[in-house]
Image (cartoon, rainbow, N blue to C red; front, top):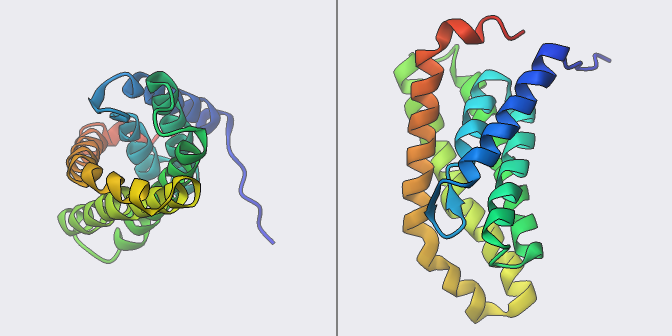
Length: 175
């Protein structure tokens, strides 16, 4: 059985991406929706799905913390888990599609999956958690966030792809 090991360089770069998520958490788009996921999307492309998931989870918690946990700690924990799942799936799809498609097609498919995961899927997980805590009517109120989540998801993903492409030579030296 092969065990994955993280190198010191990967650990340092992961810490830098986590720090960038904290910075992005302070650049709010709407309420608790911010640019905290941009470093996580980029990390999922560069470092892989697992580290992207860790960064996504911690990035969302940073955003929620800087916003005062407006939806409550349990709801934001559910969102953080959804963010981790989003980044894992996003990074996995990117890796699986890379050898099978053109770079542009890979970006389109991976971007669509990331937007779907970060928008409707994450919102569904949040609505489920809020429904358990506060009831169905409260959960349905979260639907108003969907347009903002979709816009923010697209912005974060597009910027991640731009940075990924712009710094292509840098990423080769990470492993």
